[in-house]
Image 1 (spheres, rainbow, N blue to C red):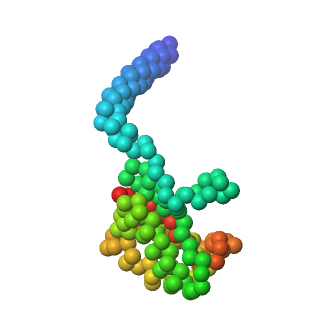
Image 2 (tube, helix red, strand yellow; image 1 turned 30 degrees about the vertical axis):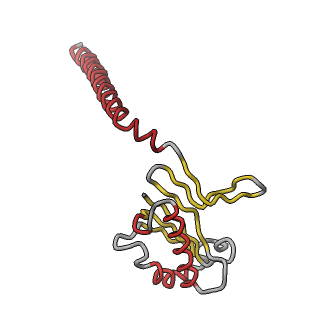
Image 3 (cartoon, rainbow, N blue to C red; image 1 turned 135 degrees about the horizontal axis):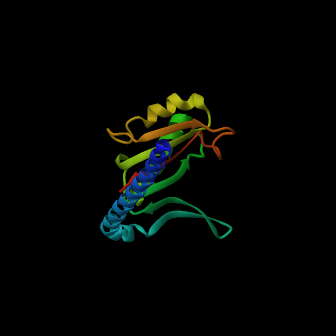
Length: 166
């Protein structure tokens, strides 16, 4: 009998503690949320307007933008180079195109946070890297490099996109 009573009392205290804990967590979350809302509300309004650059239309319907800016972030679409040349020529031209888009949006190569590199052939990795090195300043962005199954669209040996801040 005593064991059953202890078991019932333990469950009762555990559920009461759980309710008190949830109530305290709920109050803490409410306080934190209220504080965050009052602090960030003006920032949210300032960030709400998206800007797009170099919109490409397909049969009079917008297909994609060359870059998109939201608040202090810039997202640059994949750039390729569709002319003659080896991987070093293609990489140099692609990096120049990325830089043009970044400048147009009010950013720079030094403010790039993330780059995705898509290679037509993984054997071009070394040549691409030789041209890429140093182009983003002394604090390079994080980067992902992959070889694309079926190749990069068009005649480009490399395509790159990036995310930067202003």
